[in-house]
Length: 431
Image (cartoon, rainbow, N blue to C red; front, side, top):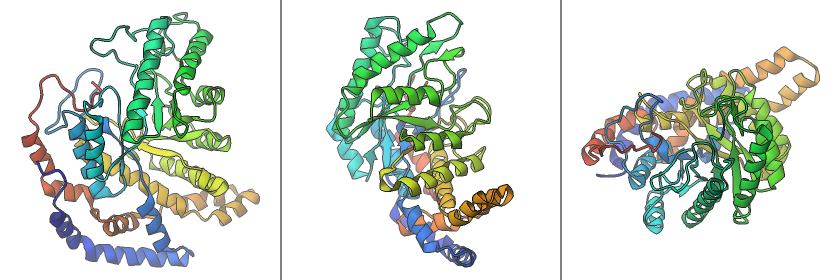
């Protein structure tokens, strides 16, 4: 199978859209100039934006009840890289891939890294998996992993995380994300304080194995699979654990891992203020779900998150470098299309936040003018920056309209022919 989409096809696609894009871009340039904003500055910013894609996201996900396999989904990590390469080729915003072990454990680490380099990809933070039992595993995680009552199960979970670090080092990664499903489904099932004590003891063993230039990202989730009491359920617990572990431990914010209507942007501001904001898993949520496409439900919330990130960057300068990654699972869409759309939506919020007139906003806040303060944000959010994003892609060698170009390429049909389904295998690894 030809991996990347033919450059001639991409150029032909862009040529058909270029005249309209130029007109839209020039019109927006005039609007922004009247506001004292330079569209070229914003386009350069858009070109420099990057968000990692999850390896598991290019496979078809599922629900607790069923999984509906898609055509041509990747059957192993090498084919996942192929799909990730196409996403970056067309969006020019996803130069790194986040791997999940053991789902993506390669038989030949050097060959995997070589293939990634050939596609122009690098590796973001690696992810450990102690929320599933694997074939041949000596000790079950049914009743916990890093918090398990069984010392042997805890030692096994720590050893797995250390193995992830070693694999990540060989691939060029510099971060480890740790999420556990540990917790309780019944009151009294475990001692709430004792579970956190065991978690911290286990995490200290992992932290000690971190290379000097690595970060550990602690991910929290309100519930699921522990429906009564998740051990790491909120940003406060995550923050306290990161503080206890040390400078290399940071908090990771997954936008879907909160109670409905939680003020996520305020959490972002607090973690940034105290130097513990490590990064993001971008997605969206309506009820208790956490894997919808970014910006599909609440784009204003996504913008408000980036508004806080822009404020933190202005305050803290180059030292402020949160890691950005998509984290979503698709059941009814083509995963490549959804990941491209999400990358564009996250990039959109980033550019919109860069358009906020911060001097005017500060004046309104100082004057206690609540309405005009809110309008200063809404002015940037309501601005259609689509022409900026499309021009950034065009200038970087991507597609003006990634989804349309992808569909015209026939990539999915070609993948279906080259990748016949493998019985019992999931391209995502999730289910």
